[in-house]
Image 1 (tube, rainbow, N blue to C red):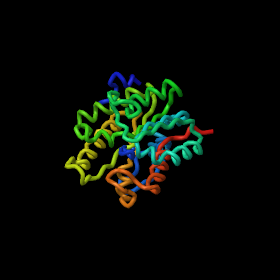
Image 2 (image 1 turned 90 degrees about the vertical axis):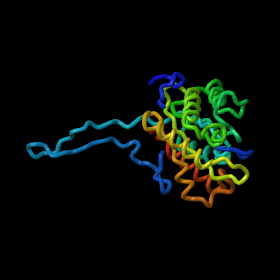
Image 3 (image 1 turned 60 degrees about the vertical axis):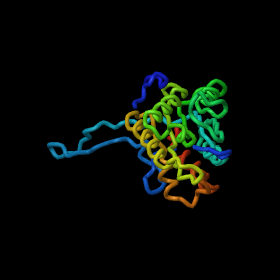
Image 4 (image 1 turned 45 degrees about the vertical axis):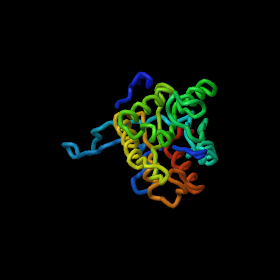
Length: 244
């Protein structure tokens, strides 16, 4: 696997913003993520034979780094408990109003946060990125700009690590004319395109889960305690265990 920093991948509020892909209607764990793929067919002489080899499941996560914004900051107590109970060694760095680019001043830069964690805590085989909501109004709703932001963030993670990215869900805000729903759709589409082209990149579909539970929202992007717990549980469930 090439270094993300070399372009290997194609192409918020003191509560600030921000994601397994779950079914569009509601949240469910994709159990098949670790299942071997086999196909049986009838052989010429009548006995069953395997025509595709068993594919070993991808290795589970051992060390996990989570970089997020206010949405993950609100969910952090339950996220930490879930990661601990699942047996992961983990580091969570979630900061309100956090954006992606390095040019943003620390600690509001996701890129700088990722590099800082690597320098102090070490590397991880699995990363979870929960960013993008605060970047929508800064160009995240433009496909090329969104791709550039995603590339920059991935370039700050451990080379060869697997990455899960929590997608975004930002509703209309009466305080501005900016079209957050349209920008949300564009940013999420670019995440989906990345996942389709890169087997080491997975989208956690917070958007569909949250849209099925609109009562969680107390403003255009943030959710209440129930929603924060659900977000944490969804995130933990997305990560494959490494086994005993």
